Length: 243
Image 1 (cartoon, rainbow, N blue to C red):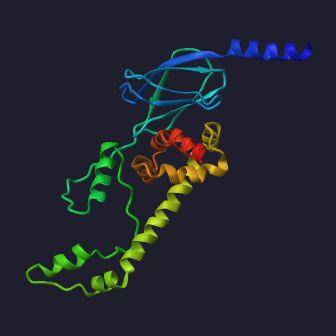
Image 2 (spheres, helix red, strand yellow; image 1 turned 90 degrees about the vertical axis):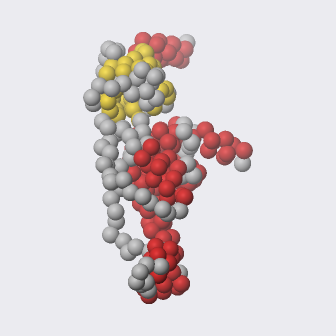
Image 3 (cartoon, helix red, strand yellow; image 1 turned 30 degrees about the horizontal axis):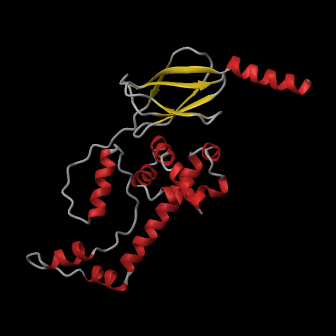
C-alpha cells in the first residue's frame, strides 16, 4: 500500500507541475522564425515552431528548453512560470564578400553555394602552405604571354607533395571539427535519443556524409549543427538496428 501511495503521489505531482508552455520564437529585430527545433532537455521531448514562429511544449518548472536554428546562435531558457514565452535568437553575422568568378571543380562550387544558401560566414583562413595546383600553378602560367615555368609547383605536383598536404589539411580540419562538436554539443541529448556515448563518434562519421553537418561544423555554428545532427538520428538508428 505504501509503495502504491508513493507511485500515486509521483504521478499526481507530475500532473500538477507539468504544463503546456507556449510562445513565439523571433529574431532580435522581432521577425518571427519558423521551423526552429525546440527541445526539453529534461524529457527529451522535441517540437518545431510553426510557420508563424509559434510553439508549444510540455515542461515542468525548472526544465531547460533549447532552441536551435540554422544561422542563429543556440537559445536556452529555464521554465520559471507558465506565461506566454517570447524567445529571441541572435543572428550569426554574415560576411559580406566580393562577387568572385571561381572556375574550379564542381565540389568546391557546390560547397560555396551551400554555404551561402544557409547563411554561414566563411571561416578564417589558416596560415598554411598552399598546395600547388596542376591547372592554376602549372598549365595557366605556361599559356600566358610571356609563358612562365613554375619549377616548384611542377615538383610539388609530380612528387605528390601537393596531394599529401591536402590530405593532411583535411585530416587536421576533421579532428578540429570533431573536437569542437564534443566540446559544444550536449552528449546527453543524443544519449537520450538512443545514441550511447560510446557510439557518438560513429554517429558523427555517419552524419558527416550530410553536407550541412560538414558545413555547420566548419563554421562552428552550434544551432545549425544541432539541427543537422538531429536530422540524422533516425537514419543512424535504423542502420545500427539492421546490423
